[in-house]
Image (cartoon, helix red, strand yellow):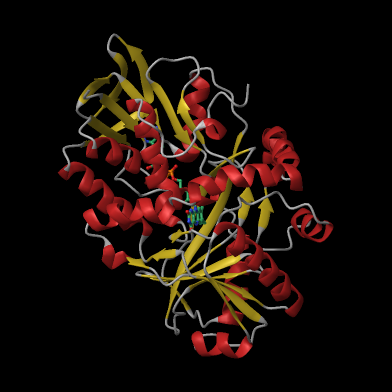
Length: 412
Ligand SMILES: Cc1cc2nc3c(=O)[nH]c(=O)nc-3n(C[C@H](O)[C@H](O)[C@H](O)COP(=O)(O)OP(=O)(O)OC[C@H]3O[C@@H](n4cnc5c(N)ncnc54)[C@H](O)[C@@H]3O)c2cc1C
């Protein structure tokens, strides 16, 4: 049966949800206040992270916590004034990061990650986006011998339990593989199944173009105007009010205000992150995580992109790019990054939940309303599989994975 669906939010998650529905012949309108893929899905590190089988836990060791508390690293920064507002969700995130609980959550996370490359592949092909995607993996580089040993132990365990391919590079092998490195490091783990996209926003644009070729409509509008109507749901757009039987909330970090206005209180928060491009030096071949410092260096169309860790701040608070300044100094120890491309850093916000899993499925108290948000550090990776899951649930088809761990009812 052909269904009419409004998808609110044209980031990677909303665009893939709309696309998966359109590919099945449903009548879909994708609503955003901007062009598709111009927000969080634009500014990430562009990694399709097949290796990311475990979600990021809240740090629990004293050294990392102290570094975060005193704002000494690039991995964590915070605005003191934002903490009271996020204390509740952060306390639950901390509790869920306790090793036994995290292991259970990681199983549910891995079930989605396992499908990431297989679900991106046909969309990349049909969208004519192969020129944007490299299949040669993601490097975790280690500065210190002790952390390299730990990284290798972890990699071996994950590779074995999740069927992942990896290679261990000693200092010589790493120097040979990455001549752009300016100093000798302790080693690297090369995750071979992960992919790197040279312009993440452009990949979303190509998926959006495929969506329109498949009969979908993209309309500028304000998701905040969503209301119940005689036929189901209605939203105001530049083309007037549009009605549909179903509406999907896929507004990434902006989902919370909308679902709150409908009476839903979820333990959501954002981890803001910055990036900036640099040119004028030799770019590395592969995307690399500086595992001992918590920053990512990735060659992109626009230049070499550096991305930072988490900043706990209000979504709309002014930028405080201290982590990026530090990240640039640290990254410059590894590769030559002389000239910034942009005048100011890009700022975005990872949409996070207290249990590190996305919120996906039917809204508990509203017929025809669906949620697909909270994909945190891996929303760019998970767009196609989570779009497919939503399409399965809306159609009543057998879901690609068991949806229970992600159900919007799980928070009570
Ligand atoms: C620094 C950084 C690095 C990252 N690196 C990676 C990575 O390498 N790999 C990975 O998988 N993930 C990565 N992520 C996470 C990933 O970027 C996010 O999980 C993902 O982009 C979220 O997608 P989304 O579609 O939910 O949100 P978004 O892309 O933010 O889309 C939400 C959309 O909603 C629209 N919107 C908001 N409010 C309204 C409104 N009122 N009316 C209409 N439209 C509205 C916005 O315009 C936007 O287009 C990273 C994130 C950051 C910040």
